[in-house]
Image 1 (cartoon, each protein chain N blue to C red):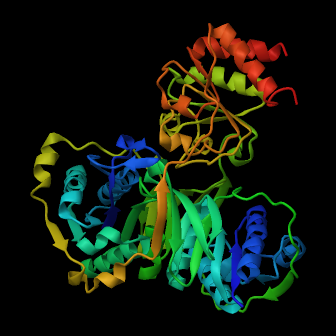
Image 2 (cartoon, chains in turn brown, green):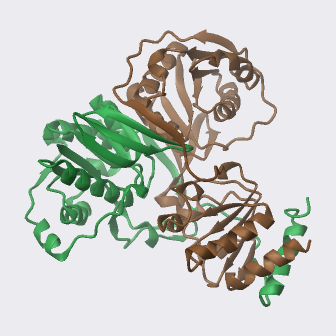
Image 3 (cartoon, each protein chain N blue to C red):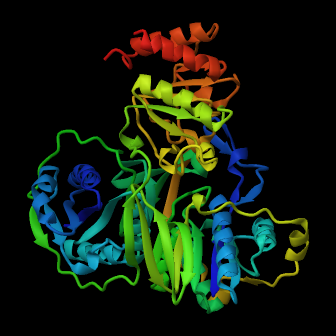
Length: 316
Length: 260
């Protein structure tokens, strides 16, 4: 019996894929294996088992230290062979997105990255991803025997997982250390922000005339209990850091509420907000494309509307 | 140091309109990939910092007409030479096929110390080609570079990951992909645009690389490619700023966003 193999360097993302992988495996008559690398990873076998993993392949091989992409790809290729896996699911974090194609190349597999849904259709797995710069969603079918999918984190909700055996297997790996060496590693500057997990987000765009004015948006975000985010354009100006960018080259968010302020609504941005449950937009241009996406729209000057909103919200 | 930079020509995606969920692609002009220009700029800066180096622009397409302007643009930016792989079989290839073509072209070029890519193309943004080429060449890869320093026999790269800034060093040859924050691509001067046409340009077919069309056949079948359907309320809040603000706050209370 062939297996589905799941890997992410982030355990939460791996467990999400294990849960989904188990559902797909059950439908396809495939087993579910996961892989985890590093010290004491066998300790998490319980969590992997509870989410549906039959087997957790672990390794503490010193060559995996620092998780160099070429070594991790080689390790996963060897685990895939050992597990008899024909399908690999990887979380499309930055690390995962550079790993998946290298692994696919090793395995002679087809690959789809930044997958936004995986649906079983007529016995084969159809992966959706954004195409034409986010204008469209392409539904792809890989015709190779081996398939690698890099799935965007938070694509699936873990809902009533079916437990697997969670057996720990020491992977029999033969690895060489990477020629690329990690010299240093530090957290990104500024306040850590996790837009993927934010429930409310206030996004600012080029409607703000100057950097200091973004403070108006920050003030409203604070009153609203929202994370501040921005378009790529604003980050390119250096007004807000890159990790606050939403869109094709930034975060793909799923908040309960997204408020777009001075955001025109170009597809490169809106691709990261289209899954928001509720969207409101404030823009001076009544024809701005953002209004096509909005549940509530305000055609007006943000310099007047934002202070009025802050006042109303404070009065609640 | 021989630096090869891979560039891709895309449709100008700002120009695409959607009609009945279908993208309208007729009469859309071509454009050089945004991140590819960052990669070209990074290559030029490295060349000038290291000295005794050259930058070769490499591109793959189904027709010369599609990539002509891109090649002219990157030569005008300052690349020293260009290599075009043009073959009708490339029209329906996938990322694996492009990677195989590029790897074969790099082997024919023969000398490469660094191979640079944007971290994704402006249209597909799959990020697959760089890592696949690195695997085919059997060399280290470092993705998401935001600073590249060459020195000794290797390269020192600062890269931007989801939550960390990492610094890695790798011996040459190596494959790097760059993020947009690495630099601001230069805009070529009129003088350099005039000179670009005189720079050496090679054009090879797949046969010149010893590849037959089957080697680049796609294994990715696109079942549909449509704009997402969005079901939104489209309620416009009228009045002055104060009324509009009150309207939005009331709507958020009603929707259960506020007051929980």
